[in-house]
Amino acid sequence: MPSRPALSFLLLCAACGAPPRDAEPRETAEVRPEPPAPAPWTETFMAPATLVAEEVRIEGPPGLIEHVAVAQDPDNISYVSRAVPQGLLQEWTVKPSGSDEPIRGRLDALDIAVTRRLVVLERPGPVPLVVEARGEVWWRRESDGREQRGPSLRLVGDRPR
Picture 1 (cartoon, rainbow, N blue to C red):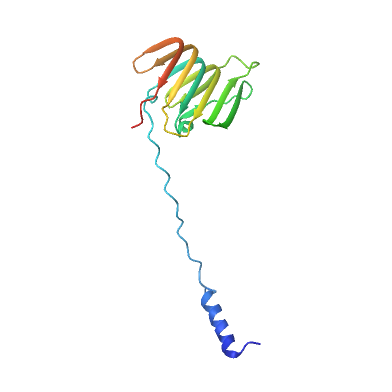
Picture 2 (cartoon, rainbow, N blue to C red):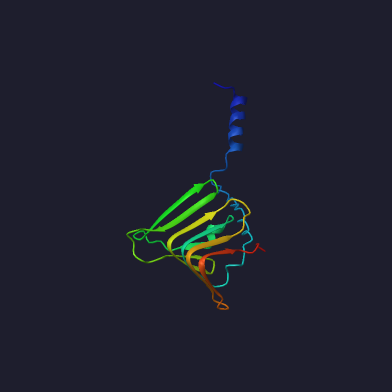
């Protein structure tokens, strides 16, 4: 059995270390880090336009996926997403047994309709935003009616500001 002074010391230490029983727990301030500022983004595709083609490939810098939306139809379109040495690759392909409905997507304000395959590659570094279309391509900018047709088309986003 510990001596009386040792017992008193142990009780004193225990009392100092424990909060009083009737004390309410202190509220701790929750520290949330500020979300990162959005990366600068090109304004090239902010004006409404339409692109129709058999195949479209979109490549761009980090953040690209946040600017792309694609309608999902598992009955008519197959979808694959995978990491590749060049970055994150997403691919939509019209199934052979699918309907004649195209893959419908959007890059900012650019409406896209693809009859065969749409590929989106988000690359890990500071690369330009490029849209390449092939096979009976038709592109039209709504603001001025400018239009292009041909077997291929390459659109490059201006440097972000």
